[in-house]
Length: 396
Ligand code: PLP
Image 1 (tube, helix red, strand yellow):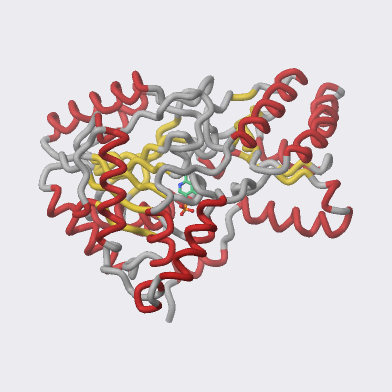
Image 2 (cartoon, protein in one colour):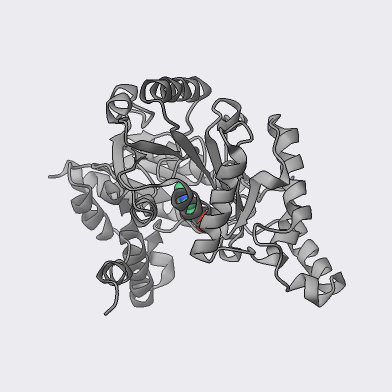
């Protein structure tokens, strides 16, 4: 027989995918220009020209056995050296190639990390709202996912709730800032409060509690500030980085794990990361992409387009009367549904051809997510539909 668990997982597509598929069908029925599809988080900004230039140069000039050959299992040494140097210069930490593991994006970084640390009976905390795949990844690694709701008014950490959720079984907490689905960034004072709390709990329970910092949106920030780098505040940190959004390369599957050098027994922990990557078959991340990103570490996709979209949408929705959690980063906006049940609100929005993602799958109720990584022109055209939806509720 086959694994019932995996079969169910494979059959059950995510609500985001379902909405996206519905959108495709609807576009075929009434014309793409008449459907306002805000479902997917696929970058709408092209990769920087430099990425294409570097790839072309690599293809033209690199011997085939290197270009398309296996790298060493954790990634090419030269690439990992360059990433370590970049991290050290930017954040003032002491990374080295022996603490970096190249992966197929943040999803692989997360699954490898979770499988490297989780043992029977462990709990992993996710702060809601959270990326729905965290549940799949944590449970597959054998952990119980413990969901801690953020404060409803600003979606920042609710420290009372978090403190209550940390138990002797807590192995790790996943932190995602800027956040998918809310776009919220955890401010430095909260990073300090979080890491102080974890240090206290580590002492109390006499064990390690890890932070897994999921960072695909690190470069997508609109406030001009730098997102606090958690290894600077807390030793037991893994950084799960990805170039999917930073360089608009989600289909190329490239990212890395950085194990903080200050982690207890960092060498053994890194060995566990290598072992986990090996056990999951995640060795030798795509070689061409490893070489490419190593030449583009200082580059970022043109996020001014997301910033423009954010402003247009935020200003218009708040003016209409919607309650919006102002996003400081990523390319998502969390909007309060106009009735308690976000699924009903989502269904009603569909009548106005607005495809929004109800928040239940992100672990909270009463909101919808708008992915504004779309053409600016689509956002502008969608505003009357948002207005009609709002008025429809007013007329109830
Ligand atoms: N984590 C979060 C919060 C995400 O939003 C995503 C993708 O959208 C991922 C991880 C996975 O990213 P990647 O494409 O790098 O695997």
